[in-house]
Image (tube, rainbow, N blue to C red):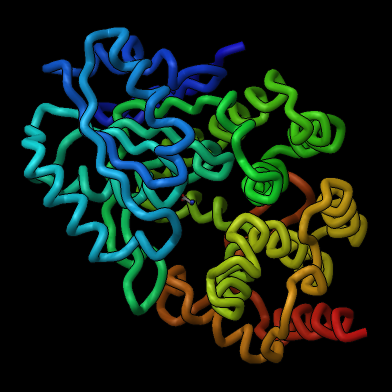
Amino acid sequence: MERTVHVALGERAYDVVIGPDLVGQAGARIAPLLRRRKVAVLTDETVAGLHLEHLRAGLAKDGIELDALVLPPGESTKGWPQFTRAVEWLLETKVERGDIVIALGGGVIGDLAGFAAAVLRRGVRFVQIPTSLLSQVDSSVGGKTGINAPQGKNLIGAFHQPSLVLADTAILATLAPRDFLAGYGEVVKYGLLGDADFFAWLETHAAAMAGGDLALRTEAVARSVQMKADIVVRDETEQGDRALLNLGHTFCHALEAATGYGDRLLHGEGVAIGCALAFELSARLGLCSQEDPSRVRAHLKAMGMKTDLSDIPGDLPPAADLVALMGQDKKVMDGQLNFILARGIGSAFVTADVPGDAVLAVLQDALDQRAG
Ligand code: GLY
């Protein structure tokens, strides 16, 4: 049931291995990369409680020792204070240039640990062991690493590719259903942006996958990672095509900013709503048929996901304020908002040519529905 996706980036190439119990086999998987039998692990309290001893045992089978720094869980870890702590701990632990740092956790830990590895001694190698669905299908692959600044999310960072990614699909069973579904928002995104067959596959199989079917989980993660790898290989540093991965994200960032980047709206939930809005906008601009946004929304609803603005608890600001929040996205270029729109399910494209009044109207109508 195991799958391997190769990310063919020349001297920075690596494998993403996807399948059950990879944490238990971590020693055998990582040993070929090691110069000495010792690794430094960055993780958080929640993940450590669930998986750190399993990883320790998986490494010990191959005689590999583990030192771990356990950081607080949550997005607020992804800033200078915990980053400084992590880098200084890695130095105190005497991580050498030829050593491996392991990121054991979700997107916050993966991004922080990857960035720490990027700057430590001008760059050491690192291995991602992503423990959330979102990090397995998105953030652990592709080499975007970094932390948040007071001025915005992910504004400090580096491209630093991992040397190996172990996506253990059995540990997804430890996720809260809400976190699993939020990660699923990024899975749906892949079907919507570039693979109509995958979207149709998800319409058929996603309920059983969310219900726990391990073979389907492995298949869904592998297909998502393959799509991400293909895009990253074409455009590693996001000069063009990689922006396709931001389908739904322009709307999502405005909604996340408006709701305080917290529990009211998880990132993957915002991505799902953002994808529905991007398809609505595409239909209104005459780019795709009106059936497409209906089909997107029907699938999200069938999965019990947040789909509309009315699914976000609490107040939202007026449409014009949401549009202003979009303008603070880091993907603004020369003052132009880059949007990902679609000519149909599986056919997304990047454009800067989106009439502001159309965006405003989509948001206004979505807010009106909420009020009504
Ligand atoms: N998460 C979007 C990217 O890696 O480009």
